[in-house]
Image (cartoon, rainbow, N blue to C red; front, side):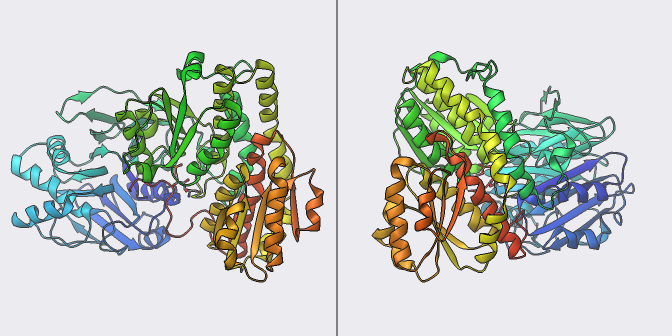
Length: 622
Ligand code: M6R
């Protein structure tokens, strides 16, 4: 989704802002813009449709804009086409300006989120003489701030507070006022925003990687909170205009962690970071060699008392939930209901008491997942989140948070965060299973030992990628692919299929193997790629016979299975083996070749796997 980057300090703001925006590119966008204010009070705005490099060329990497205070934005279009005019920043003047000429609008702003009642507010502002040059809700928001500022003759904080009371929706808003040189004002509700400080500079951004190069000293803006940013200082206010005391936290990421570190693409780097991400996750939740979540506030009695799990998530996090369902059933023996957060939020599902609601989200900001969390809370369920970004909205609003220490994930397609989520879910299953007496200590230790060996086994898979590269180049021009499996293998198919489709643009579908012949098999033609995942011993023969059915209809069969199953070669045209681990955890290994497959098809097609078209890393709108 949109990315915000603002700077006030001693440096020239333009290059710093452009640099920050480039580190937010992963969030997804289709236009970009920048506004820098010089010492005389003039604001220069430049906007460009398309990639950030267009904006960088138009501004000589930001250096053509003079001034030490400014705002930048990458826009992922919601209201209005991704045009230059609709790009942010927006101004309170009736005419737009995006050529770098000097203007002096009272309010200049950038926004991430959606203002739901913008049509009604637009009509109100039209009545008061405002005119609109764009189709955006953001222009309405900026003009509403201007309207309250002038009508009530109040300061920026009061004008923002009045605006916040009036608007409905979500926003991370950063504005400059003509009357307040060298200052940026922010307001936030349900859209991510962080503020970083050094001794003499202050930054505002949508995410930490934008400013890690400059500072690790971070404030997390809370919901319905405003801030005044001056060089080296951020002062926070609540809706009443009272100061909220706050101390900055030190970001747990190093500046290097958000760099490519010698890899050409973040996606590949992150695929290769999985052994570490998994290792760090295991260590984080087994402090004395046993699964222990007490540091997160979860005590053994909590495990004993939980009777049912509800898990809510979107996209890959949803697939992690589906995969975990089988593991919870097997190891913990409790009922699990997995729901897509976007569906659950509008249904009247009665939730049972003594249940734990789990929300999984890499970013911790996915709007639908956040809404599902709130809905579960309304029904007085205890909530637990599994997130990769500390300080994120979902982490802050849940009763317990298990943070995956996977480090910043920049590629749009998740890999290492997914693997870390799955490990947390395995550990939770062990914790509940042993807490409820479903398995004895010895069994739990054996499983834990298997989990501890997963990183090494992932390393082994990653050490030889030639076969997968071959398959990727053979099918790089394929129109479609099917991934099939049963049980855990079906969950792996779902995530593998998403990896393939989102970065390679091949239409790829995951099917429960037994469902194929209820309709989908009619799509198979000579040469259609069918990838069978067969890691589950008790389901092996069943899936194998489904693959034979596909082969009989001319499909090209690629099989992904555990080392012991060499008999598959009689049926499959291509075979990929992964090391064996305990059956419930095979998904962690089987997924790796499929991540590589998606990546290498994308490369073979000359695409950018880090930034697939139309996608955003963090989906903060419904
Ligand atoms: O940040 P979240 O985990 O909540 O994001 C959920 C989905 O948007 C995300 O997993 C998405 O499906 C990725 N593009 C998958 O690679």
